[in-house]
Length: 168
Image (cartoon, rainbow, N blue to C red; front, side, top):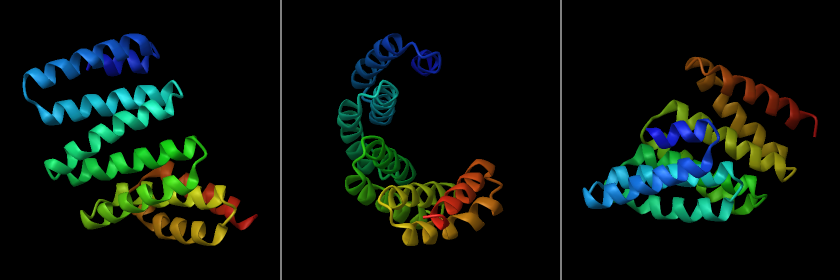
């Protein structure tokens, strides 16, 4: 919607204004999924503004809504998003449980792309913690899936991170 357009244009003030109006509309229309999406989008805007704590507050409000309607795919994406937000904050120990939960859900619902994203994100955490062995394992698990799914960016990331891990 319009809020995403403003976000892409990096007009975050306008994007937040539109998203906050969307939240009000979703509450009025009793649309829990629309409400959750608006919360997620506002959180993403705050990540772009490097307001990570605020972003996490919005993500925390969003997570129970996805769980309430048993939207496992959105839950996996959101958990990965929360984990990567903690990575941006440099809080690797907090990131890891969210990323592992995301991986478990992605495997449960058999979504190869989300499995790859989670493996790569987990590997990044281990590399940041100077622990290359589990990073190599996660990247080795992700690489065949990225190649099968023609996920070129993730395939590139796997090779780049494997190179980094082997040079530690």
